Image 1: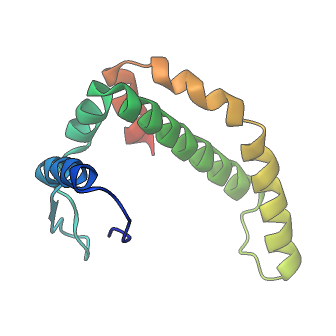
Image 2: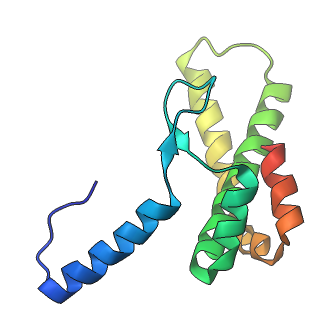
Image 3: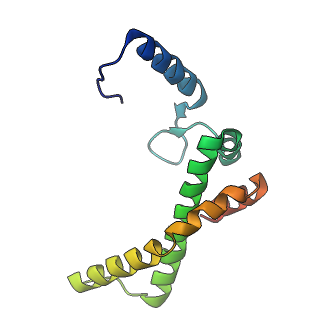
Length: 127
């Protein structure tokens, strides 16, 4: 989806050229048993593509780091609180713990950028 923008003809042509390039890379296809379509790439192909470009590599590293922190927090929370939340206070406590746990690790996100393809693959497979 794109929002209408005021731009020069030259800018529009450059943007359309880049969008066409992206459409060639990222294609959606059914991925059973999932019901909705997903990018038609394996995890290794996505990792390889994102590590080729410094800009994508940085954003992909941050994304993987965020997923790792979320998974670690979820695992820790479930180990500490095995029962289902039934009161509003439980949700409030979980939100507070989540914010403090993830907020303290924001500066650590950059460390993922130094990982190799094999290390990133291993990290993504843990998620």
